Length: 393
Ligand SMILES: Cc1ncc(COP(=O)(O)O)c(C=O)c1O
Image (cartoon, rainbow, N blue to C red):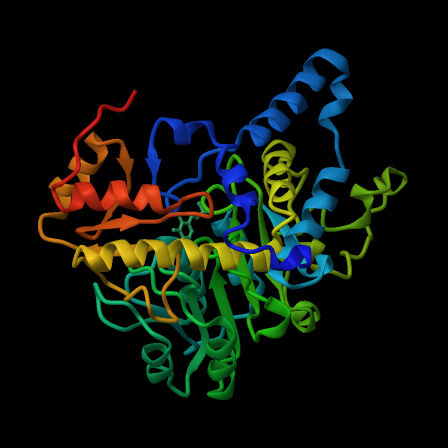
């Protein structure tokens, strides 16, 4: 067995679960909102701050942190480090991407219905140049690859979508969809990867995706603020950079160049980096991804599939359906339960110490690699009325 193919039932996962102190207090099924911090991540953050406070203020200056994180993110995303700009949020990445394009009068931008607003608002800027935003699919229903492809017109210049929908849990097939869009003449594909990165390997270099933005905090533990933007390398020279900063040019690495006002931007996606990086969230995220290194991206995805199969078994035997069937290849780690009176059930789950979200009138269950059968037994016991409530400590 290689490290890349760590089995989804390897004892590694039980040990990993033991690293989350909060799991002693809650049944946590709410990763699409936020991921609890494992203790080693909290320790790495404490140590970083302690060293700067007690040992040496220079401990706050850590250029090795962003360069290591860029390389680690590249491995998880299936691209090269030079293809990534470091950002502070998904929105930061998408805003940079949208503003890098020279939009033209009449360009159409296709976006699915039910999108998270991070995908919608950055594109409104393109309207200043005469572009139009069009929505595909039906409100309240999963928007599929077919829905998006059917909505392409000869004027569709760009498509922008969440890889995994926060509101339906539908996971679009990045590789197939991005290629099919290009075959239909769509020039640019923008992806919000926030609800997928850290669980599923997007294998960006093998896709036809042009921009992919995400940050940690949901499926990648760490304080928020450490994101990245992938920019497809053959686009770099055609794009504008309205966000040029001193971190876009080599003087940020070589202070002897600080007085040079004629520096060329990095010949990599680093040209979209923006200012001194937020070291603190980066330290946390790096510590988290280091914890998962023995599993690697493929091992994490295999574990996520296993965890969702455990959930599917429990829900099926209780006769509870999900908006996207969990047996479908478009299922993700986000399941929207089909239940009457979801709001009061959501509260009942909360009273029983089971944390989920309520989204668009449905209960959203979003387990991660540390969840297991016992969590789903507890969930289903409350959903079916056979579970006893306990108070959150
Ligand atoms: C699909 C999706 N994109 C983006 C975000 C957050 O965006 P940002 O990183 O800009 O805060 C969320 C948060 O819930 C989300 O669900």
